[in-house]
Image (cartoon, rainbow, N blue to C red; front, side, top):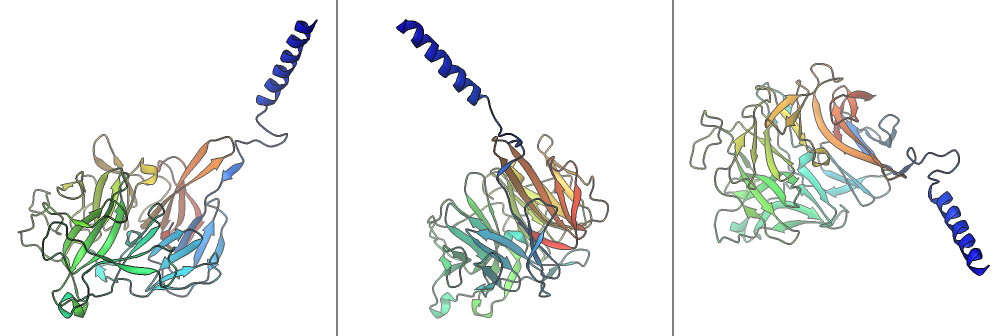
Length: 393
C-alpha cells in the first residue's frame, strides 16, 4: 500500500508540474507579442525639434523647435544630449536642456556639388562600459605658452552633466614629436572594443584655433585609461594616386577630402563626405587602407553605421542608401521604398525583446522625406513619420 501510494503521489505531482510547465501564456495574453524590453528612438528635424517614439510610428515632442538643426544625438544613463552650436544635456527626460559643453568643434565645408556640410553623428559616442561620452572639441591648448599638452578630445564620466567634461591628455608612448596639436572630428568603436578616432591638424600657432583639414590623422585606444596611439603608415590624406590607393604621408595632396569614421565588426571604414575620394577600409586599425567599390561617384556620403554588427550601411546625399555585400566586398544600392533623390543623413538600430525570449530588430533612417523603418535588414523601407530630419539615435 505504501509503495502504491508513493507511485500515485509522484505521478500526480508530475502530472501537475507537466501541466503548468507546458502553459506558456496567461489566458488572453500571447507572450510572443508582449514586449519585455522596449526601445526608445530619438530624432530631430531641421528646425531643431526633438521627438521620441517607442514603436516607430507614433511619436511625442521632447523639445520644441529653436531654429537650430541638431548635429548629433546621444543618450547616457537617464540623460539626453544633443549637439547644435554647443552641446546640451537634459537631466529630466527632455523637459529642460542646459549647456553641457560650450566649445564643440565646428567645421564649415562644402561638397563637390556645393552642398554645405558639418560634423555628423560620429562627432559624439557613448561608451557605457567605460562610463564615458566622447565628443569633439574646439578648445585650443597651446604648449608654446605653457598650456598643457592635450589631445583634441573632450569626455564626460558623468553622463554629460555640465562641468563634467575634461580634456584628455595626449600620451605619446613612442616618444614621437609633432603629435599635437590636433582636433578629433569623428569616432567609431570596433566590435572588439577598440575606440578609433580621426583627427585634423591645428596650425602650429594653436592659439588661433585655425584648423588644417588637408591632413587627417588616425588614432585609437583599447581601454578607457589606455593611451591614444597615433597610427602611422599608409593613412588617409584626402587624395589618391590614380590607382584608388591612398597617398603615402610624403605625398602632396589638395585640401578637398574630409572623412567620417565607421566600422563593420573589427574593420575600420572611412567615407569621404566631400564626394571626391569614396570609401576606404582598414583591417589593422588604420595602418593600411584599401578602397571600396560600388559607391556612387560625385555623390556626398553623409553617414555610416553597422546595425547589430551584421550590416554595413552608407547614407548618401541624393542617391539613398548603400549596403555592403560581404561576399563581393562591394556596396549595393538598397532603396526599395525610399523613392528617388532621397538624402539619408543618419542611421540607427533598435530592437524589442519579447517575454517569450524572442527579439525583433528595426533599422531607422533620418532623411529629408521622413523617418523610414526597415524590419528586414534594409531590404525594404517604409515611411513611418514624414518630415525633414537630421539626426536619429
